[in-house]
Length: 594
Image (cartoon, rainbow, N blue to C red; front, side):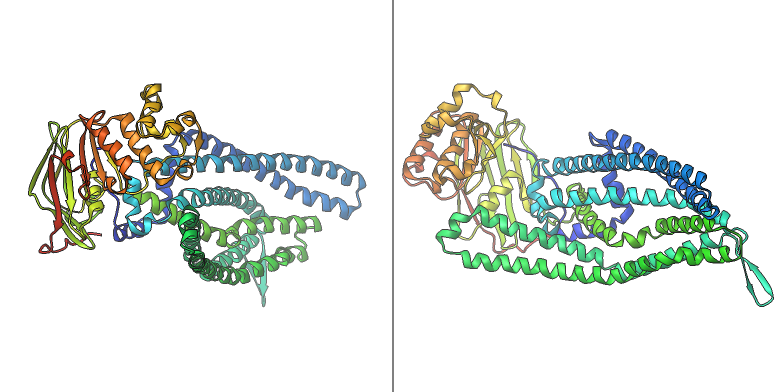
């Protein structure tokens, strides 16, 4: 039940424009702001602080380990057995500390992934479940496709990759800072001779590491930049396939009765082909990138020794110094080539970031970002009246209109809205509910009286007990214990009374007629002041229809009823006023309507 004005969600064009305008830093900032403001924000900050301390401690131990290399190999070169045994003891202490730090980092890393996902998913689901927002987003084009995929799989991948990449980048940065000084000291007086002249290159090993990794990073970007779009396309196609499978599973009865398995198999195979095509393009991109990453990986096996060799042969460092210099170069170069090693992961992360941030941007879009063309005006009366003035509805099929230029529905009245052939009955229902604002005219809702909306088709039965379904969306505690059984009995559903507290998939347990009766039992229990029904009477059998009409004559005698649909044969007298929905063929379509 609701009388809220419709929220705003961007059109497909507007959504794409907003996403294009939102750069990488802005997308990251928006998601970080959402997580920081969530209930887990403080906990995430604490975990981040602990991770920073653990990474710094690990870097310190790695520097000590690098220094140990020099002492250990110098002891070997001197054949100093006593110092050799001592260095093994030092090695054991360093390794023990590194093991403890690695385990600690793993726990912090995984815990932070869980908390980050909790904060992000809570933010997205909270905004998605704002009044009418999910419905509007579903009609917003590409941004509203497969929201479940964006809030589950995409957020999981995004959070996992974000933590892994941030920790990797942090470790790489600290390692580079730690070992850059070592490389500089080792090669600060390096020079090379050309002819009769010596040319000094202070910090030769440091500059070599930077140039080597920089060239690899640039080459990785050039070769692998298409992976972002390919990864995003892969996630979109995966979501389409999952939607196809879920939709088939939800309609197995109809498919089986129509012998439509072969047709559905073709749909599945078409969706699967799209996924395979996206995956093949992604595999090709990964393969091309591997030429760069694998090549640099193999060259790196020898590069540290080759870079440090001039210092060794010039007598400026010992064998232990050569090993220490090569290890320091390896650590610094590994830190600098973080981008090379993680480019495919970064592309995957960027693709999920685009999907999740674009989805969130669509959820928080403001009115001034939208252009829907002509809109219906929604107001609230100061008394118990629903008034409709010059109401026109806009849709891709054309325009419909309420034939009566001004209609007034008083409290307790029974009104039938008859629709001509080809007009949008459901469109009118959605417009009156605030879900479809495109068109013109004015709808003024009754003051302080929420309207109960009953859409066309099989009613929505949330997961839970029958008691919760009857009370939905109100709390079970808001109703008397005996009222639940009485409501079921009134619709000839006494057999369900012993199962009031049983939680099942009731949409599968009950027949369609029983589900319709359960929906009217919900109205009996909640006794709303206003009820708006989209052509539900026409789908009821004669016995159920008679019970429903009797309800509105007795228990719901004070309830205002507005029914959109055809006249109810044999019960025409129950409606005191009849309105007419007709085609407005003379009116042009408004620009910007969906």
